Length: 144
Image (cartoon, rainbow, N blue to C red; front, top):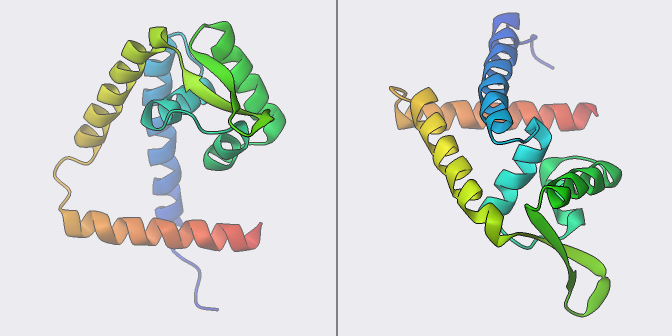
């Protein structure tokens, strides 16, 4: 195994993550959502109709946590559970009609946020940074 990566990289990574989360969380709260519910809501805005299990895998949360997140959005009238074709035990999650305009606003916000935070960074550097982050994530997965 090679030498350890410089600590400043991990410090910067942690700081950037914290700042992004804080910014996104503030926007989510303005829409009456917690950070976790907003992540779920955003995923459903991108792809309507996944199963609870698929959502738990995508968002990397346990099934009981996913059930509570969906329950919270359902109580707000933002999502509905529907039985999957062929297996009524499996539930697919859909945004309600009332949630569509809110979903569009959150998608616009995330696009603006992405454009703002990545402004001035050349595409080739973003590609390198993305590869580095994927490698870090893979290394973390191996440690788990």
